[in-house]
Image (tube, rainbow, N blue to C red):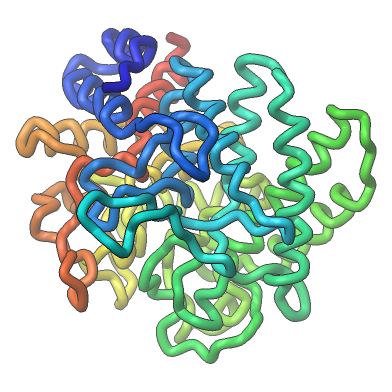
Length: 408
């Protein structure tokens, strides 16, 4: 069995005493989820979690949450996961979503497989930058920059919205490329290549990273900075609602009947595309508002006052990874107190459920109740949140963020 001793030692004194049994369990879960090198991966690879109902699997933004969870204590392991992921990028620049790995006893799962047309939210540069900030370049940025340039090209040719912005395939095929399966934003919406607030913000983040990395490597590229500015202005001027103080998709931002209070509207805050005034409204009027996202276990994936809110997967329940990103967005704009409130409340509730159930859940009841009573996908055989699910639970990273806010 794989052992990650630095991670186990790191969580021994991390955070509140009430969190530590849970954090220790998470550290051991990372080790349990790590496997020897196996095609297509050149290094040991970490699966989404042994409890994932469609596992074993690698990738999607689940992988990035796992990397951010361990990077402070296991740099080599974190770097290997990133290199494993970049190794499967195709010539066109597409980086796939979930990579399904072989499963014992299943004749249909004898080799790794993944979609050749469906990508996923490109948040991986944040993990690369976190590694580089902590340990130095170590050659990783040079490798990552080449992959980033190819991925930007793929988004520009395959996911460019009309007239500006970017979209996920959700708006065309409802295949949930956004990672937000069965999201409420796409209910009763005419399909078309229109700008999605999350995709547009994520690609803005790619341009910002490309500009920074090209300067770091001395391979100047003016286009990335220009495109970042253009996309930032589009987000600020065309995807923000002064009525809600929140960001929305291009087809709904000006139509109250279609406008949903879906958490995906926080992404411009996370990537730094919002103005200072917009950021303050997103935080004060929405992320910290009990009538929207500041639930007993924050943050709900749909505002509790929205008519589409329900206790089903991405339609209301809390995913700790989204609380992590929301907190990063708060910190980006200097709202450390807001970030701490989100993180500590989520960690407290997660620890309470761990003490009661002895496991880490895929997603949680926003009211703080029993996760087992939540719906996942009623039309499938898997209608309950998965247990022992690491992919959306960067709880160690969240506890570290609190410690850093507190100056520890």
